[in-house]
Length: 320
Ligand code: HEC
Ligand code: HEC
Image (cartoon, rainbow, N blue to C red):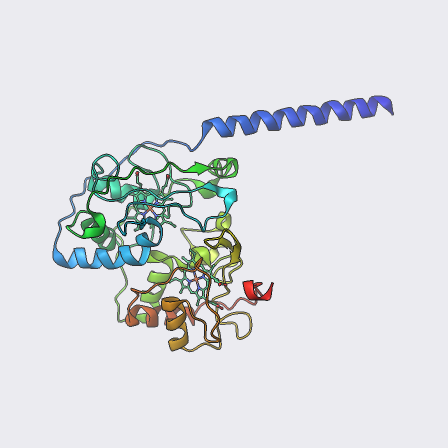
């Protein structure tokens, strides 16, 4: 008996030592570096592109990158659960050193598609990768970032480096947290007259509603969003500005557990103003999409009617 316990003790001890060595390795290895194979791209600025880029940036990038100064100068992201670390978005104004003034257009395309920054460092899940966004929309965002718009003029504010947790560093060793390949073929947005396809493009490719609205950030399938765990059925943990957890809602059209009994008008009101049909205000963990047009919202709604209904019952903050 004694020997068995001694052997077990030694085995257990070795396991603990191995785990410690592993954790130390992951901690010091940090977020991995990759080669930067930026494409040769020169984005021509024209007023249509800049306007489209401004719309996309207001809808997508500003939710994370808008600082207290109103510019895209970066801020602390309060809604990301602590288990991923302390996360700050970057200053993406035109400042040559503190912003992204020295990125080439190709390097921006490369980052937005693959997740690899100009310095070769991979950006984990807290900076989304826009693998489904059309080439033209990516160029439009870049045109806007280069434009005379007030929000992108050089802000003299240093980006606070993210402090990714050991868990995030560990995840970058798994397939889910690896850079995405550069698309091999041109990507085009569907025609706006095809409401369902255009709605899908917004929900998957531009605003990425599905990412917050699935079950778990670590089980997101970016290439095939429908295959994300609990796709659109909610339950993913976000934080409100006070640091309290808020679970994302089930936004499939389930009559009780989702939003199946809502009208398009009620859906529009909720996503623009944060007000539910029953009058309950949504937490700030759900961004207010004030700039989405009626056309875009109606397209999203048309698409959402086509996705499989989830009966996942999410525990809402007012039920606790
Ligand atoms: C969910 C939040 C979020 C959204 C949405 C988002 N970003 Fe970011 N972004 C981040 C974070 C966090 C970082 C810092 C990542 C890091 O340190 O690795 C970052 C980093 C960047 C960088 C790298 C800056 C540098 O110093 O190398 C660029 C460029 C950028 N974002 C552009 C954009 C653009 C353009 C959009 C919209 C199309 C966008 N981001 C949308 C969170 C976000
Ligand atoms: C940053 C994460 C995030 C993103 C991105 C996001 N949501 Fe949400 N959403 C939430 C959270 C969290 C809640 C729950 C808020 C609460 O319970 O107070 C929510 C709630 C909702 C609700 C209310 C449902 C209900 O039953 O109360 C709707 C509708 C909704 N989101 C639609 C969308 C759509 C459409 C998009 C894309 C345009 C989107 N969301 C993008 C986090 C997000």
